[in-house]
Length: 628
Image (tube, rainbow, N blue to C red):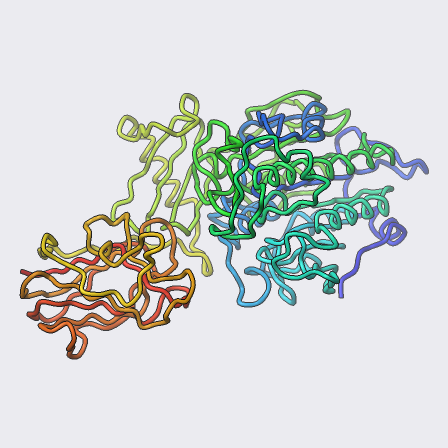
């Protein structure tokens, strides 16, 4: 079992492990030589670009982060590693973008945890550990569950405390946390609690403060990825009272995921302000211990604010400011995030920079600060010259992102230009959208047609800036469809659907209404029958058909997407022969075509035998029949 190094052990074994820093440094009181700076990396969870006062927030109070910005440097064009949690953290810790990172999506394990970082990964923690730093990670991990190679203690952290699994972190009153390989059971906590005896962020900040006190002779590296303000909406009453009643605040009933809350807007604001208070406690302790002048503090977020689930209201708080998109988007609102850096005596206070940077730049920056060489096979570039206000800052030729969910997406930032391809696995010729961020930071005007040479360069970067991932491949473009005629649906009618979600209008007739944006979905509220699910359609008269096309839901969800299927035809909707076609659809959101021997009949039936993800549902956005 891994354990934390105490102050005495660390000072005995780590002091001579690294080269001297070329920057001005403090000197040990016993004259043993220059002292490396302490490093604290604070990472919020789903905090939007404009959700702190220093980035324009008007409703949520963040006085300590505002003070941090006033005493340091604020980046206005900094980007997260990804638009969701796990890959963003992987990029930050390894210095690689999602075209090369080992984790490129939230790969869930059947047990507790997510896809693990491989055992030979060189993380920023391992690099600093070798440079003589005491290292700790406290908060949310998401890069490997219990017993895997991804555990923090196996990735360069001397000390670890918090949530290993992102799903467990959806509850602020969890049944357990983990400390250095040991499960810490929290008595009296039940899954799904709105309140409990111990609020996890309180436990996390106390652990962070203890680590700082234990290593006040330094140098230390503290990685503090808080779970705030990721859903669910949960905060103690003493924090909630600050915002309760300030605005109209309709209750959230829990129907869009996570836990319900009677005052969701107040809860969200209170969660952010309480996080800010905890950061203030860390700042106060540094001052108390006399560490202010030799500690670099950086604050950022792992991606943009959440979309419309769980009672969050990003529109109300203007969480992305002028930016388009949110979490799970590669538009600016999903990946442009705050970055604040304070280092007294080195970083000029009250300054801002438009330097274009990304979280994979943090590893080489900290390598240069620690006086060690960064790995060669990374994508990051040190922004230390920007921190110190010195010349010689190297700039990226481009920044690259990929995200396999929502049909597969890629994005490139190249100077003033931002290129995006969306739905590359759902559209047969997904176009590249191009935006000029100097004049259109909201990405409202696609100017691809006016700049074909830029489009060509960005397209080439999207092809060459990546390697294929075994665990997180980008979806391939859909296969071509035949040019066979599609039978008009003017006189089609629904005979029956064995189940339909009438409570929210996802009824059977939507499966052939000619609009792929609508879909039939079997019932999921209350009792829901299991597979097989069947929808039967009257084609209006006897037809000779040679195949059909199945369009899964197009709203970004996979719930109910059919996997195994059977397709039948008959002249009697109560009597069916053997299936004309039987197999599995690709687990993808594009329209799929199935051909068979020409057959005549009036009624067709599509039967779902299983669904993507194993859920007991079925859905169809559009069913088309090929023939005469």
